[in-house]
Length: 109
Image 1: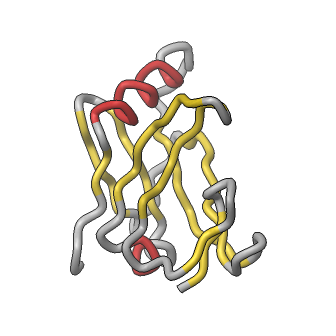
Image 2 (image 1 turned 60 degrees about the vertical axis):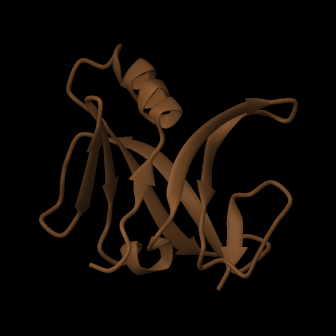
């Protein structure tokens, strides 16, 4: 599948915190869709269903699901969780992105 997508320790800890209160086991679903100020944008949601073609990434009990259409746009990426002056959020460092917006949720290739 080419370059792997990684989850940092901080992101895994935050995913585990978020899903701890859920009644059914959940995963963080990350997807790429058209839109945003740079052409593509990341979307984050909780999901309890793994589709047959999803890429599942596990780290310290945390699960991330990425649909097969989004994986090529994220090859080699790192999913992190940052808590800074702007706020707390998941951040994706994507080596394929040639530009991104200031908030870091949209990018272009």
